[in-house]
Amino acid sequence: MPALAAGMFAGCQSGTKQKVDTEKKPNIVVIYLDDLGYGDLSSYGATEIKTPNIDALASGGVRFTNAYATSATCTPSRYGLLTGVYPWRNKDAKILPGTAPLLIDTAQMTIPKMLKSQGYHTGIVGKWHLGLGTGHVNWNQRVSPGPNEVGFDEAYIMAATQDRVPTVYINNGYVDNLDPKDPIEISYKQNFEGEPTGLDNPEMLNLKWHHGHNNSIVNGIPRIGFMKGGEAAKWSDVDMADHFLSKAQDYVKAHKSDPFFLYYAMQQPHVPRTPHPRFAGKSGMGPRGDVILEADWCIGEFVKTLEEEGLLENTLIVLTSDNGPVLNDGYYDDAVEKLGNHKPAGALRGGKYSLFEAGARVPFISYWRGKIKPQESDALLCQVDLLSSLSSLVGSQIKGQDSQDLLDVLTGETKLGREELVIEATTRTALRKGDWIMIPPYKGWAVNTYVNIELGNLKNYQLYNLKKDIGQQNNLAESNTDKLNEMITTFEAIRGKDYSKTQKLELK
Ligand code: NG6
Ligand code: CA
Image (cartoon, rainbow, N blue to C red; front, side):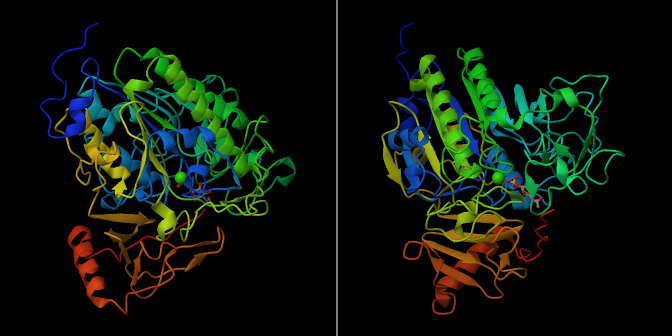
C-alpha cells in the first residue's frame, strides 16, 4: 500500500507524533514485571546476572534512570499505570486479597479505553491484582466486572498474585479449564473442612513458608487464602511463564492487522518463585535469580515474535516493574542465602514496601526500532504518565488526572521530564522534586524485620539530594530548611494536609 502523504498525527502538538508512520497507528506493548528491582538487570548495573534480552531493549531504546512506579507495592502501581491517577487518591488502592472487588470504577478512564477510542484492539495477559467482581464472586460463573469492563477486549489473567488463591487462570471472566462438577470455592477468612493447609500439613510442602503463606496448598506450595475444588483448572506454577508467553504471542499473531495494545504483566520475580526446570539452578542465585533469567528469556521470545510478524518497526515497547525488590517475601527460597554479591536495588536504599528510593524507582525502558534513538535519560518520569503520553502518541485528547503528557520524554526527544512527583508506599507518600526527595515524618517500624527492608519511617522530616546522594545517607532536613520548606509547600499543595493518616502495612 502506498504511504499516505500527510502524517496521521499532523494535527498534534509535538514533533514525535508527526514522524509516526501514516498507514497504521503504532502497536503498543507494556511489559510489566513484578518486584523487579532497579539493580536486577545487567543493563542497570547488575554484574552477577545477565539479562541479554532486556538489555537489548535498553541499549536499543531509552534507558531511564529516574523513572518510577507510582508506588512501592503492586495494586496501587497497577492502578496508577492504567488510570493515570495517583493511587493515594483511592483509599482502597492497597495490596488486595484474591476476593477483593474491582478497584477501578468502570466509568474511570484507562489506557485501554483511551486506545479503544482510537480504534485499538486491547489485551491483557498476566497478573491483574486489581480486584474482580463486586464483592461476592462466584468463580463458577462469569467473573465480572474485571479487565473486560475497564477497557480490555481480551483478558487472560491470574486474579491476584501467584501466592494468592484462586490459583487458576481466568479467560475473559471464565475460569479456564473449570470442570463444573468440581466447583471452586474461595475464602480469605476460613479454611474449608478437610482441606490441608501449610500450617497444619508441613509434610505436604515442597516450599516452606516463612511468614504468612500458610493457608491452602497448591502444587506443594502453601498460599495466602483458602481454596476448595477446581482441581482441573489449577495452574502449573513451573509452566506459568511459558503459558503467559504463549498467550502473549497468540495475542500478537491474532491482532497483527489491528493497531493493538498488549499489557503483558509477567509474574516474575514475585513469590513463589517457580522457574521452569530449564532455568532452575541456572543463575546460581536460587529461584529468584532463575526466574529473572526466565523472564528475560520470555521477553526475548516475545520480541522475536514481534519481529517475525514484521511488527517491530511499528511497535512501541515499554518495559518496567511494578515496585522494587524483596528477597524473603514469605517463603524459604534461598533468595537471601544465595544472593552473593548481587544488589537487587543497585545503589538505592530500601526495597519493596519502602518509601526510600528502591521502593518505587524501577527499571524503565522504551524501545521502538527505527523510531527511538538509543540513549540514556535521567528525566523524571512515572508510570502514571503513560496514559496521557500514549494518548498524545495516538492522537487522542484524553488526559489522566495526574498523568502528564511526556511523550517526547518517552521517545527520547527531550530529557525534560516532570518537575515533581508524589510517590507512595503502603499509603505513605513522599515528594520528589528536581534532584530532591522529601519524606514527611511517619510513625511505624523503621525496618520491616520479616522482609528485612527499611521502610523509610522516621519521626522527623527527611530530605535527600538524590543527585549527590543516591543512597540516601545524608538527611539534610535540618541543615537546609529553605529547601525543606519549599518541598513541604509543594507536597501539601498536591497531596493535601491529611497525608499523615496512613494505614498499617499488613503482611499477612
Ligand atoms: C504481602 C505478602 C507478599 C506479597 C505482597 C504483595 C505476606 C506475608 N506477604 O502481603 O508475599 O504477596 O503481599 O506483593 O502475605 S505485590 O507485589 O503484589 O504488591
Ligand atoms: Ca509487585
